[in-house]
Length: 143
Ligand code: AMP
Image 1 (cartoon, rainbow, N blue to C red):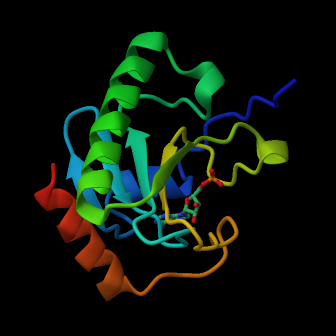
Image 2: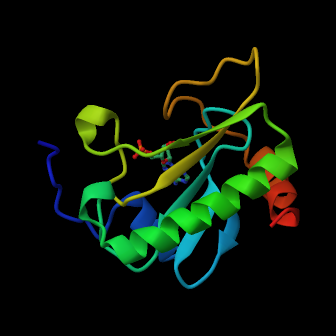
């Protein structure tokens, strides 16, 4: 069974949403916040998080909120595709520590892939803040 963690209101993404930790925003509306991953697995690695739920993972979000989140994830993935022209895109979502989840506020990863380019390991190398902002600006233009 996936361990169902109690929602920690001080998890990193909760702090990002409250503005206590800076983020490189790509998109925001009433339902979701999307921002660049600071340990990108590839150039353009983008996260999408729901704003109005304390779901820790895919299993404990209500279906209507999930429906909006997945629609926004598709919108963001399309913008990443148009902005960065990758050969492929991974949409990833981890449930539970055993699966590799490190932040217990539900989120989707949008990870562009290029043929012949090795992806970085999960949460390994920090990105340059200026480079992240440039990527976010490029994606925003395509929204
Ligand atoms: P997961 O391991 O699926 O829970 O993913 C959490 C992701 O959040 C990882 O890819 C981290 O690199 C990323 N991350 C952690 N802290 C931050 C932060 N402050 N801003 C943006 N991304 C972050």
